[in-house]
Amino acid sequence: MAGKAMPQQMGNHEMIAVFKIQRFDPEKDKEPYFQTFELEAEPEMRILDCLNQIKWTRDGTLAYRWSCGHGVCGSDAVRINGRCALACKRLLKHYDTNEFVIEPLPNFPVQKDLLVDLSKFYEVYHSMRPYLIAGAPPEKERVQNPEDRKMLDEVIRCILCACCTAACPVTGENPDFVGPAAIVRAFRYIFDARDEDRPARLKALDRPNGVWACVNHFECTRVCPKDIRVTWSINRIKRELGNHK
Image 1 (tube, rainbow, N blue to C red):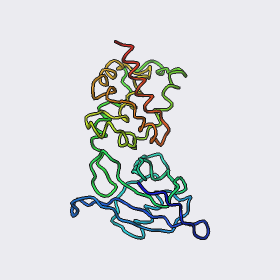
Image 2: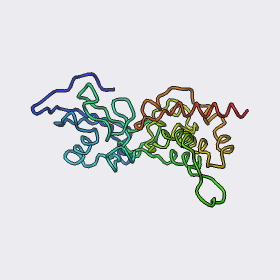
Image 3: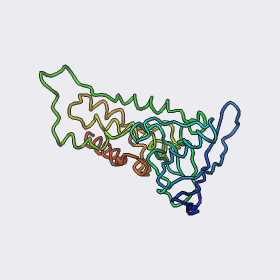
Image 4: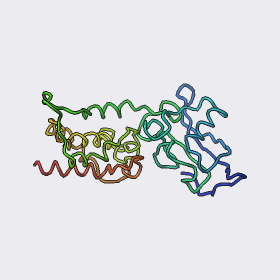
């Protein structure tokens, strides 16, 4: 984790930002290593802006993901100074240092530099059947009352950035843990009164590597860029399972 050196201010509110970026090219590197870049930056700049500047002006081989740049797609998740976050949502002024250690998301295989393989993440996510399961269409619409809808307000904000799963200590120790992101998605349908597969969804999570593997570290909640109470959602499912036994 970077030290607590205060930002070195320059004229016009600029600062010298020091970026220590983990690099790894599987075609030529045996182990990951860190490469340091210094650049003039403004405190209001995003981490993503700095990564783009490094790639466009210093080293075009730097590999990382980003798409919308506005905290909607979730593709630019990395670990910044020891904490998983979206590079497009974190500004330099959010940190009391001018040194930024940028690493790929932990708990996922590194493809190159800051790129990680999310194949298993999406595989587990899709195993939760992330879609409404219902019978024949009604004559009008499937009604959802305001109270039911309110319970889903938080979890539907999930953008699948994988920050929660990457930050989870349990995921690091147990690769078979379904993970917080998949559980949050299951929550979205378990508590949707229109869904007709609630018993099967609960059963899928009622196992050692399901919700019971969570031991409330709360890291998933701390790093969620959409302020979802991930741990609360997991514990709510645990309570629901207890009510059905």
